[in-house]
Image (cartoon, rainbow, N blue to C red):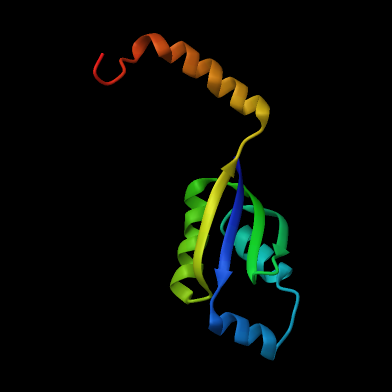
Length: 108
């Protein structure tokens, strides 16, 4: 399971709905993530009217949520970034070092 930071910009229509019927959307968002097989860890709203979520799961499940939200018109743009611990980065750099002898740079 990976850890993801998801950022999305609400559409005008979604914001109109939130103004017309203000509510804490955390429960609805959590239910969506759970239905997709992911775990919502944190959810924030930015002053730019974007939402940021930290969730645990995998890229395919994450993509299914993004596809649903984009196709529904709730968000106009978004991104997902996989987050890694420094322990995971150290492991990746060890692997990169092991691969170095098997790689030939362009033009060499």
